[in-house]
Length: 167
Image (cartoon, rainbow, N blue to C red; front, side, top):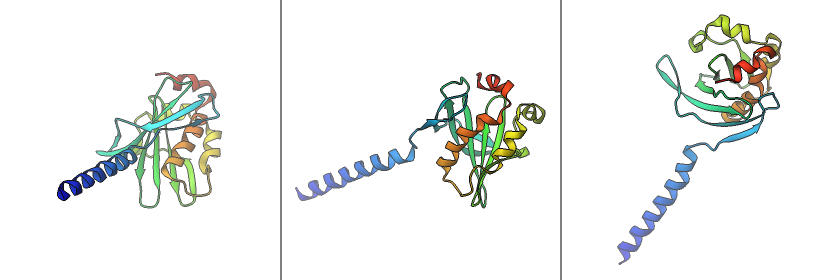
């Protein structure tokens, strides 16, 4: 009888731990206001990761209230920082995070999936300069993705913004 009782307790603890740690494995959706023409955003884990040179990168899905297109944000860990590759069907950008902060930088060739001429034509050069230093301190991955959700839409030239939001 005592063995049966101990087995039941161990089983209950195992189920409890599995439910606790199982929920942590899948990050909760993040939401917020982008304060841009795209409105509120929702960030969740993407079902299909972005693959760079055969390496699957952790990828988030970014959806905006006023946009039809889904935007993906892939995280590529480096030795001293993380690269965040932001990709839509028509435009892409790279943000880099380090101890000194988070900012946009020129897209590395290995991440490029869109012709550089097309990408450069849509890029707002003034916003690119402004966004090179978004923060002065390091950010967690989730904080970085939320900041990107707020700033990324501004990288696109005004006249191309509706074009980017389409599927």
